[in-house]
Image (cartoon, rainbow, N blue to C red; front, side):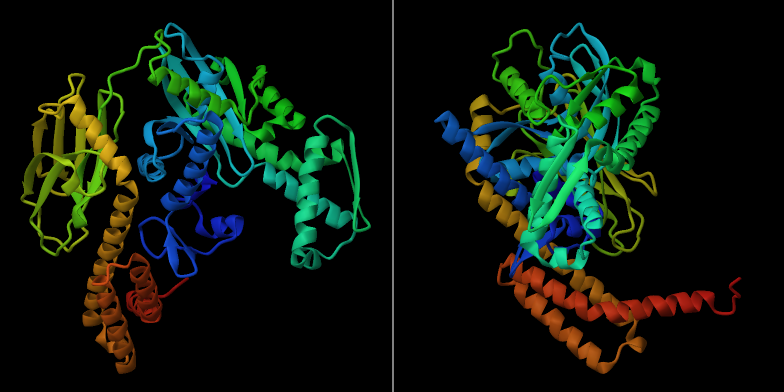
Length: 534
């Protein structure tokens, strides 16, 4: 669920709503928000609840406090999703030592990559309950390189269960609508379908009866049902192999991950495609967690045979609107390293941009260590949001950080060289890390409030400009209602209540949506005026 929470921000919103069964709000380019009553939760909030529960369970079993963790993520997660995972860990009270790819963790569990002299090319086939992904990895000198990744974030063992339920509904000539309305029966059927799926991995027939409904299915019938979905995963495998620019014969090993890979038909199909033996000796539900534990053991210094590359002791980033810290190179990233991100201007005609570089783990730059500051000047005068300024962080093997900023349209560029570790002791680093964990809850709350305030201010500015330019298509009544909604949003900014701000943003969006659509229709009509459409 933590994976789905973080992934919702970039996936199909409608599909996510259907799967998780909750209302999602995506009226902005920021993270998707989940509304529960009058409170809004970000994917980071939801993931942190899960991580906190896992932390509590681990502490209960180990009978000792747990403060550090290695967290795994899908190989396809981008920088923003990885940073969101780090933030969720911090909010849960964990010092996230490393974020590692799930296929890398699975490989470590099988001992691949621990021997630094070993060179191997492997495929990791990961079919879980709700997601599927396949990764092609090349391991050289203990370094894991993801050559390609592919998959379907809405395909998994749950879909197998659904097919079985649909089969039983059809066989018994049941009314689907009646079944869906009867939540108890619907859930019982789903659980029986899951039981049948597991039973058919070792038997030829499954038979059961609930409420006088006969639930019969054979292994052959089950395999016919799931064949299209399994073929779909093989299509993803073919694309991953093609994207990796290697021949399938170069893949030396196939590692199976996820509970749904226990299905014999899945195993045989994967084996036949890769023409290679599959590795599923380790519990596929636990193999990624085991690999993460091995990585944690290495980081703890218990495995002296494994060489760890130099890493950044603290996160490196820059200041964005509202005094927030935007991390480009997270703590514990390998050195050398490079990261880039694009930014834009806040005001019309803005000709310069201040680049302030910080080091630390707190969400507000005022709580972090300032490393350098410079101005990028000569930005051509354009409306706010049009200039594209790419800021790049490059750390060389000696730990020297070079920060450069370039306006991509004009080519204007400026850079500065910094030594992040200069003048900071191990004790300072330790204190900054401790402060970030102790203040994580308040930091995340502060960030959420500032992001909501920034979003509100941007919407107010955009709405005001829109009203000034489109007075002819808006009635006096609409102007009055819009002005009242803008005033309510403006007032909410002074009350420092994130949920109230989001509520007022939604109300303003609902009011302005009709005449925004009207303006779009008018623009299209003007563009097509006098032109014939074939």
